[in-house]
Image (cartoon, rainbow, N blue to C red; front, side):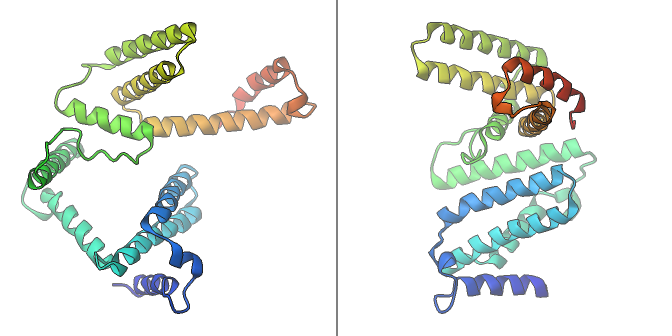
Length: 264
């Protein structure tokens, strides 16, 4: 263990020490810390997107602190320690890279990905058998993932057992089909629950199209958000009045000009 890692663990333990620790930290649980963990992961992704190395260093530190925090909570319950977490991931990485730490011959990144997925599938099946529950190809896709990301993972799992469009054309046609069903529900205008369901199907089909085109939907939507934000702020600057006082026609004219200055 490095000196800085030891120092960080000692800081965490002190924060949780009933004798002189931080009142806020003493009140926290796995459940209350989990949202912070998710937020820190997104801030890491944002720093990477911005190519901001100083911020990335800071955000990775914040994310590491989340690992330390959960490990401290578990250690207090006698479940596991930070060392146990490090040991578990080390053993997993060795197990899942037999071409590096063993004598298996894997020549390409695609072949490694396939081998990785096969190992994970075998581990999930073994776990289901040990627990005496039914096994599914979709087991282990975390429900807490962002919806777009989880949709893509579910689709990838289904594709691995042959449940997939042969090419992007089929996925594109499905988008058109789902869009038409949304239109029909809008025209019916009498069942919000069914409309929500059809919107969900449309979004799911869009994720499938992105997957067939090797595009990460979460990244694509994040970029679209950034582009919209940039255009909107550029539009605001181009108006000769407060945006709330501008007409839709005036805003649209500035919007078209703002499109010429898209960040991506």
